[in-house]
Length: 170
Image (cartoon, rainbow, N blue to C red):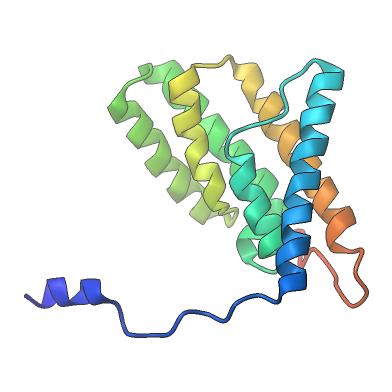
């Protein structure tokens, strides 16, 4: 019975709403980042857009101070999770159990390497559903994640008094 009581939550209040200016700027940041990555993809003829990048933008522009939104986490988390998804795909094929294994291993590996980036946890799922070649690790994963970080570097440092990132490495 106590276990079900836990589902009610602790009774805390919602966190405060962000100021309207921050909400607008976060949306503009995400729009800018995805538009740029999509444009670079079209111009270069190489895929640079990954489904999980939309969620990365939520962190990069909505919550840039979060540990999950730091460059090492964004790039490292995406690359590590994609690598592990591709490894599981290569070793075991695309199955529900291998997808689950790849996600679980990716979570543990990101935690162990201190590169946790929650959106990257979906990369093994994307990989298992699309069965890409190993080049997926470079494009869209590495180049796309690096492009997002570059846009975040430019965008998140425009405002006076703001500084991003908090760190690059430990």
